[in-house]
Amino acid sequence: MKITKIHTSIVNAKMRNWVIVRVETDEAGLYGLGEATVEFQTHAVVGAINDLSPLLIGQDPREIERNWQILYRHPFFKGGVITMSAISGIDQALWDIKAKALGVPLYQVLGGLARDKVRMYDHLGGGNSDAVYNSETSESFEEKMKASISAGFTAVKILAVPRSEPLGSAASLKLADELMFAARNAAGPDIDIMIDFHGRTSAAAAIAYAEVLAPYKPFFLEEVVQPDQIEAFARVRDKVSTPLASGERLLTRSEFLPFLKAGLIDVAQPDVCHAGGITELRKIASLCETFGVTMAPHNPLGPIATMVNVHLGLSISNFLIQEVMRSDVPWRGDIVHGVPEIKNGYIHPPTAPGIGVEFDEAEAAKHPYVAVKPTQWYNNDGSVTDW
Ligand SMILES: [Mg+2]
Image: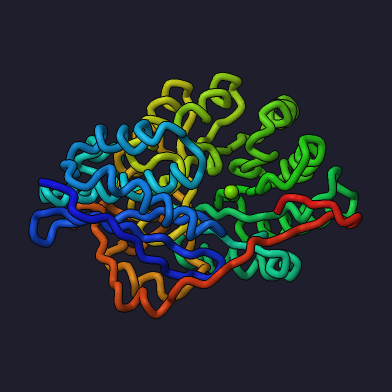
């Protein structure tokens, strides 16, 4: 079996342009799907896929490890989110082909079931844009929480930390307290609430927010500082007893290793569309298992990424919980068919061969590429800050 063609489709889903990768083979009807979405850098990742594709034409798609090594090592320069996302999307498609060729669901070729079902958590939004965040109120968090619970979820993520100056002001700490109070009040004591700091806080501000939020018993705090500030992360770790999570912006095992060796994270959040695909995510999971760290893969992207994560969650022993994005566009189910329903907060093992989804190109064509600018936040004095 040989790879004959690799191509991409772009589907606009509001702030994200999903990049869908399709790898064709010389066997009639056998192809693989993957996702390589990178926010705000769509043309770059499509270009990287186009640059890398010739390296795999003529290769056997089932030799996934060798193909991954070709994509990673032969171009000489390694890493970076664009190249790694391109590799990630292609890699997912190769696993899809392999499982389809064997006639089994993907999790079967990843070692089989390590659990019966995958616990999912809902994302209540907020923080994706300045406008969305600024319109966030305690009341709307309460409504969203109730909607998630009635949909069966037992865990949710919120962004309770507002746009931060270098140090959290008394007013912004009060706002975080009010938002978290509303969320916990609506959730009751049994729902797990994760709080994403989005790397928008300094270490000092993160510690102050963590103190305010701790009485509400968050499940974990995510990206308490920018991912490249490992020393700042250590300062937060030193002062905060709530479990800490990070990793959506880390690529490959190499970037997780310093966090693991320093004992900084309890929960690793690699993104299967950035960190190196299924191949690398399994290696990151094994590395984390060695350090007693659990996995909650980052997944705000499209439905193919969600399904890939479900198969990983089913087969990885140190898996904790899976993020899913439901609040972006209502037509997710129209363009990718086969994603199982979330029942009582869980997804059960899919039965179709491969990743188990079909991509409807005609439906996707109704949502063509749209140039999307990132959220741009500034401090009160006009200096640039993270969102
Ligand atoms: Mg996050």
